[in-house]
Figure 1 (spheres, rainbow, N blue to C red):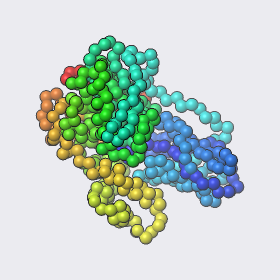
Figure 2: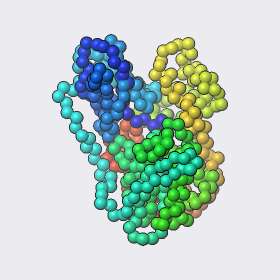
Figure 3: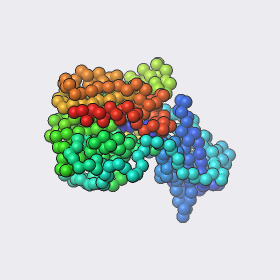
Figure 4: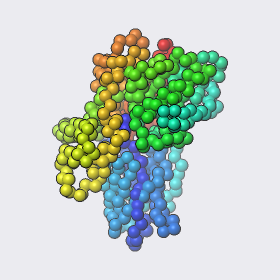
Length: 454
């Protein structure tokens, strides 16, 4: 879902003269509950300007650019995803800092790494397909004529001539490539590989404004992404390998939501959908449930969880409302107990303004319930019992209550599985990168068998 925590470490910097040299590699461990995420910062001066890159090895993230500002012996950092770090030098080899994201504060100590070499990442991902493949693979381009955006992707299909069922894969929130590459996992490449071997044509593509696809991601809403999906289905319908009467969508998280919305609008040539952790309740309610589940998994006590929940209910009601940006901003400040005249709390203020962008407010106002009751095609909806981003219980209940009866529909909760459909221990976001499995083999098999059985 949009707002999911990805620990991308990109530093913001302006050059101010000071005596110590900050050039070199710095490393620290971000500890969240029982999880630990190391990351490395590389600082260097080129022609009087500071350059910085950052790595998060366990998440397979390398070379993230950014900037950092200094004031005296203090360091101020702004990271992608609403992350802030501020700290002070302790000697010449240590920075004692605080890491802040989504209202969570964690201590972070960065140590200078003398003589440290930059080692290549070696994440073990045994399910990632390796060539040569047992099927045909072709890179393709197609156009969303509504928005005049050219999208680039990959189509895989069985080598034996024939007319096969086909699916379009829709990624979750955030700008993602055709493989839905997260934490070193190539989720959609694994899914496409399995399904193609089962005799299903698969089209996966880069989100608009990402990798080889055109357009601007940051200026787009679910309405735009839905039109991209419509264009993908129209492209598949023209392919000689595709049975035009058996074209479906497999959407993960936000992609599952898009699949539900399109099915509820009775999109022509859409024969079935697979929603993997797709929201089935109003998004403002989902975000309240998500933040509660994340806090609980992180060990927050019930008293603080309930206080945070009531604040979040008020905040998302404001975001969802028709109040102007100025009115909504003042209401949010009041909800979190910050005076409009107080110019401090810059990190919090930045987070609140991010929640008031047009695209985010559009997203929060979506109510999938109105569309679920209009879906007449078969639906395979799956959730993980450990999912803290789209909790299984309320979403499964909504689907069970609202979906019209269909003998081919399947609603299923997978025990011990997280939001990425990995077999997990806690379900926490920080755990995703530490699990070698990309996707549960049972989930893969169930999806393939269901499509073939339609």
